[in-house]
Structure formats: C-alpha cells, structure tokens
Length: 405
Image 1 (cartoon, rainbow, N blue to C red):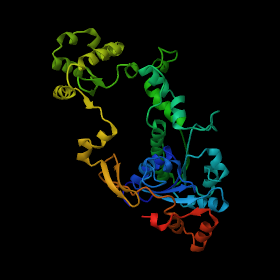
Image 2 (cartoon, rainbow, N blue to C red; image 1 turned 90 degrees about the vertical axis):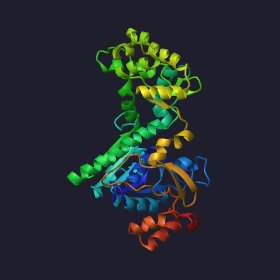
Image 3 (tube, rainbow, N blue to C red; image 1 turned 60 degrees about the vertical axis):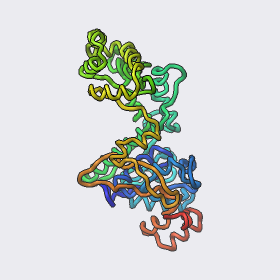
Image 4 (cartoon, rainbow, N blue to C red; image 1 turned 90 degrees about the horizontal axis):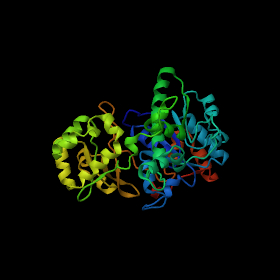
C-alpha cells in the first residue's frame, strides 16, 4: 500500500459517477476501497463502448484501484454481510437516497451506535432539512436547478443547454473527497467518527453563485446576477485565419504587451481598454475587437507572437489531442496500461505531486463484477462455511475465476 491514505478502509456503496469518482480518488491516494455492488452491477458498467460486457469505458476510469464484492441487499443474508463489512471499515460512502439507506439499516444513526469511529458519508441530491430532501437527483437535474442551462443560454443565446460533462457529479465528488479526509483528520484528534452529508444541490449552488451572485450579493441588490466577463457572447476561443486559439488578455500589463505586439498604439489609448474597470464595463466591445483582430493571422503566428509578448494563450484541443499533448507526454500523466481482462487501456495518473507519501504510479485495474467477493469476505473474518452459504443463497456472487485477475 502506498499513498497518504494507506491503511484506510473504505466501503463504497455508491454507483454511477459522483460517488465512484470520489472513491477512485481516495483509492488513488492509497485507501483500500471495496466497492459493494448489486447483482446487476453499477449502471455505468453497461455504458459503452466496451470490449467485454459489464466493463464500460466510464466504469473503467471511475473504479480503478478498487475491489468488487456483490451482495444482494434485498436479502437478509446480504444485508447482514454488508453490516459486518461496514463495522470493519473506517469510512462508508453511499449515494443511495437516505430513506433507502435507513430501510437497509445502513444509515449513520443505525451504524454508529455500534461503530462510533465510523465516518459515514451520505452523498445525496439535497440537504435533508429542506422540502426537496426525498427528490431524486441526477447531474442533468442539478445542473438545471442551479442555473447551468440558464447561463449557457445567456452566454451563447439560443436554447439552454447542459454542460457536456457530468459537472454536478464531479464537483460534488470533490466535496466528498475533502469531507472524508477532513473527517479522518478530526477522528485522529477526537477518536470519534461522524456522519457527513454531501448534497449536490447545495454544492453546485455554491459553485455557481461564487461567480454569478454579482449585484445580488448586496442587500439591497446593486444590480442583477451574472459575472459579465463570463457571460459575454464573445468569450469563446477566438477564430484565427486557419483555426482557433484560446487567449486571455487579462491585466493591464497583458493589454499593453498585446497592443505593442500587434502595433496598435491607437487602441492602447482607447479609454475602453485603459483599466480593468473600464474593460469590465465594456466587455462585449472589448472581446469583439479582439475577435476581429485575431482573424488576421494564423493560429501558429498568433501563438508565436503572444508567447513572445507573454500574453496568456493555449491551443483549443479535443479529447484525442489532449491525450497526445506534449506536456502530458513529458510528465507521464496520461498512462497506457494492461487490464487483466480488458487488454490495453488508456487513462490518467494522479494529478497531485507528493514529496513524502506519494501514491502508487498506477492504481489497480477496475474490477470485474464480484471478482473479489470471496477474498473480501474471507479477510473480514467470514468462515468458509459462511461464505459458501452466502454464495448458495444468492445473497453473494463471485465472478468466475477466468474473469478474475
């Protein structure tokens, strides 16, 4: 075991994106993560493309470094086994609705009576003190409820649209990671675990309003919501003579350097460009003028000119180009590795650097459904007789040996 969380045992009852993304980060930092799945498996196992059934591409990325045990929590024996595993864990993470978790006896009040050191993390849609507590929550719904489609409409015009990434799931997943690590730190000082609720709606509300509260930050308001620089229709990769380039001419020094580089002293004297406040007040016109100027040169010409002037810019890349980016090649962040059943795969490493407790270079492979059921139960103290009884009852499933690493 390597990494700052080596020795921490996490029982992962989460599925889809938010919880698995969080527990994959914990696993990459050295935690021993056991993924408890239903007999049908995590839904993301079945989203292609894939080489083998149950091993979809998103599942492979979000579940590296974990082990898989299959328990049918609808059966008494399966619930009893899950309770035993929870009692031997440092952290339990679930994104089941809290009401369903309570029916299974896996809620924090039920578990922490016997296991006061357990850190119980419930990832849910909404804070449980409000009227939305029992509502279902998915990334699209939370994006919509917290203004992402409204912002895209305000930004680009036309019909509102969701961000084309699982933004709410992944932002909330990062809240889960720091909640777990902070709770572990608190337990070291107090000796006690605790229950932590991580709601998507509140996490994304904070995320969106941090930028866009604007005039509504004051009581009474000093204007409408919305950070103008982020909402102007001209804030987009600039079209060049032969492509696009991402450019952010931000502070006064950047603007002076930009005007000097393109030989436009008249624009440097334009009061709209003179100060940060003036540019913010005329952001549409400022960005529109830059867009006009950018069409005059090729992408390569602009990159050379702006780099020499120390004006921030980056190329616009697609996913395939991002994998091949020379920076990632130099740092080794993009990895190619062999999966025992899925063959050669491409993924990413740990994005943080550690001087004292570095994580392993490559997390273990994402598990086949139930590939570790027998081993997890045995390590938890189940006898062979108990394991055999669970398997025969159908409350537990073990993947066939030929699909196991």
